[in-house]
Length: 157
Image 1 (spheres, rainbow, N blue to C red):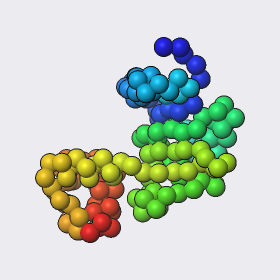
Image 2: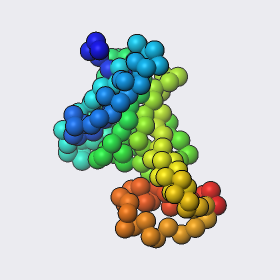
Image 3: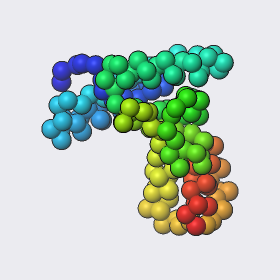
Image 4: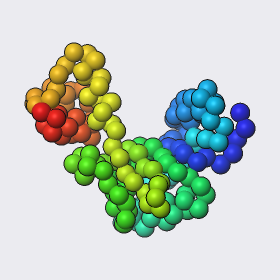
């Protein structure tokens, strides 16, 4: 596989350990999409007071580099929402975190799909969550995912 600058990727602190680039690039190759390359955007932990300015600069630089989207991982799912002008989906506004950023129509858009994966996993296991209280999830889920599933369960149900 030819290495080149990514146009999509994963943003986080220890993303060099992630298997996401391997999986995504294999999928792009299998689908015949040679113009796509999924890379990593490793960020050292900036000081909390610097996060807004950091992300605004970082995202502007990515647009100039031709990046069109990225997965956002911990610890930045909540912090990235401080970016001025970021278009937030309904799910992001309700949940307060984003795991996907896409650049389209000259603007960065934030989405959250974590809750969909958690809900789908539960439903595939035969658990219908719409309208139900999900206190039992505290034992098996990360707090952020728990909150996301709870919010969507209430809204679905």
